[in-house]
Image 1 (cartoon, helix red, strand yellow):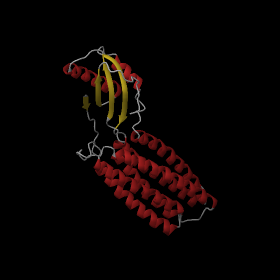
Image 2: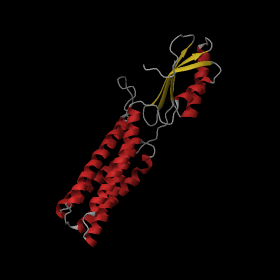
Image 3: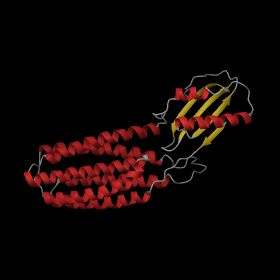
Image 4: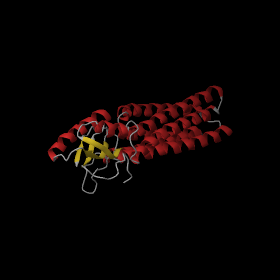
Length: 301
């Protein structure tokens, strides 16, 4: 049985995440106090949005610590899936928050209230600056990591929600149009649901061990079968352990009853092939010769 793995780990900064958590706790407290003092439902709903992000960021921070823990006898993969679970939880939360904000926006649209617009304007500016700084801190890591992307999206939508509150506050101050706030909240909530659903889909695919979307099993089987010593590729499985590790396992039929040393040479060729062509960095092959069993490409184990 051939077995190999390469790691292409992108180190993620937990420090930046911790700074974002502290900033968001401060923003949430300021908005809750300001919401009660001004009578603004917009500020209170933005505070709820921020608080949900504090919870999500803490989940992401814990996952970021766990994923670095070493494997052990009873946890042979360590906590490598912790970040995928965090992304799944966070994206689910994004969708729920989006639905709650839509309900709140509809209610507020029907009964617009007059509020202290000055306090709304100043506190939304504070939230924009705080979340904007957090967004910049996490932007780099968000491109390489699903868990960080979910945290980044939470903060980015928070910032956009605060922009909506600011615009609403300015329009209320200048023109007394209190329904604008509800309209902007509704638009942001829809965006939140769309973004959350996309992340939910991608994290679910990894958790369910689905074949990565950019990998075609037929192409892998064909490429491996082009090696002169190989007759057939079957029982083929490809899945992601996390965003950095893609695994392949397969049964391979050889044309001849080759020696173990010959198999080692061929397995190295297969590893190089699937790594270069398909980005697969963990290969597990079961060699076979003259076995009269099912040769289907995919077999339910």
